[in-house]
Length: 115
Image 1 (cartoon, rainbow, N blue to C red):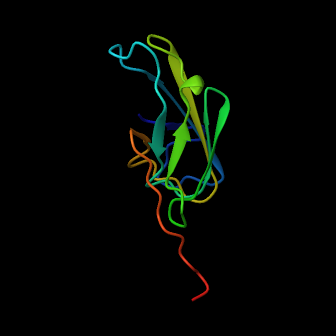
Image 2: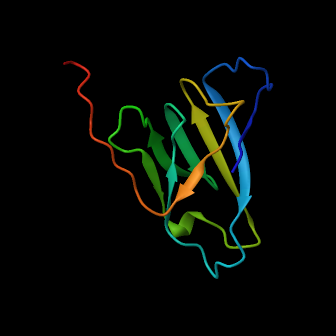
């Protein structure tokens, strides 16, 4: 699912920035299911689905790489769902300004930055 910056689409995007996108769940789903969002290659920020705070992400530091999205946050087909990303450091846009829904969580080990 693609997200669009609320600023211009030049090569140099300033942070912090807001990115917004919309998606519709597949018609094959009779109702929404719990899911996860893989925030790689995003850097650090907060994610909202339909106005609900899904959580903070910082996949390079971990341990949480995916964010849990409960079914109650999602609207069934054919309603449109909105996603908003508040990126603090460096968005992957304009090249790969997308997020990916996955069916399994990904938990990475914590990295000790003081070694």
